[in-house]
Length: 401
Ligand SMILES: [Zn+2]
Image (cartoon, protein in one colour):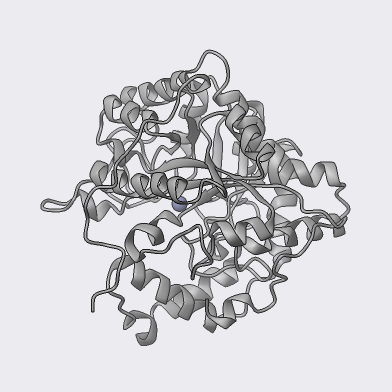
């Protein structure tokens, strides 16, 4: 990994009292690198998150998401369900390659078993309801093959849910349609965690009205600190707390800070950035991210802590977690350049006066509780096992030549 991305980070740093505090990261995009670049996430890789660095940073549970670029929806392309299936298959392969390091988590009990065995618990997620292509059968198909989290919508509006991005996609009415409500109810019944990051404000409220289980807002920040559409307003955080849900604070610098957003968007306009071209879109993204990171002064860790502490002040200590968005973001904050560095958060929160029990809630236990409640007795997840998924034969994973 490029030298600059570790500058300022205290890799493998211990928690505030010497021992690692376990971490539950509610959103990471690393499966893209595994599928498109052939990175084995069970080894030390280029990028933000792999199991080796996760272990150094105290990672106990991670949601590995399958994000399908909406470009795959266009005629002649692979299709969202198929692309998602390829990503998920790479997750299955990771489990098979490194059973000593990682265990699939389909419910709360599995996470307990993973922790007892000293393994990282991997939850599989889908980022964006377009992956189910308008079908509850597809949703169940993914559930049976291990998916336990679905972000209802990404930045592209769907005909059943509006995203938080004004002007993106067709002009869909605000909120959830009756099919959208059925999706949430089906997820509740199966024991899949409903994730409302990227949802429009009305969609957020509609989903909370329907959901009988606590939800995640897996990778967002606080709107009161920076008025980015991906962040939650204080009123939303209060309703999230009533639902017993968790806001996972994201490490995405443009969401956290107005100045960082302006600087990065100016750099994206430059010839240097725009001339970067990899052998596929994931390679291009990785190279652009590394270039951008080399050009900026990293956002201070304190800014991440500000968002965590604001979340705690507004929603309460039981409703804030961590959702890095590693490998889905370009720049990382200072001291948080990779999964080896999570403990910097623990040290920073201790310096702000939080005790170990409260820090553990934020880094791990709050999200663990949401998993337990959403996959508990009465849901299919409480009993279900993982159905095998063969990796489709696709030409990816190695650079040409
Ligand atoms: Zn996202």
